Image (cartoon, rainbow, N blue to C red; front, top):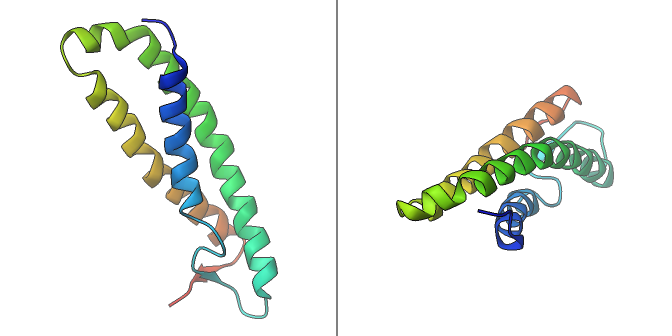
Length: 109
């Protein structure tokens, strides 16, 4: 199966959806740091996650493109695509959390 725009779109959308859910300050705080600085640091961490996940998403897309016909024949193509999408959010959250913790932030209560 060829790499189709639909497959790339689905995976790209999953990455963007996961990252878009993390807008604003994401519930992070740091004593003495104004909200606009928190938002900027959070945006930086989201960008870090997006960069890391973009590479992984491209790998997943390539695998899907090469194995998609096999999965479609056995009726599991949609399951494979959904599994790739479900892996995005936890990985994104973990990267963002590590980045924010490294910057000295804690979760707002």
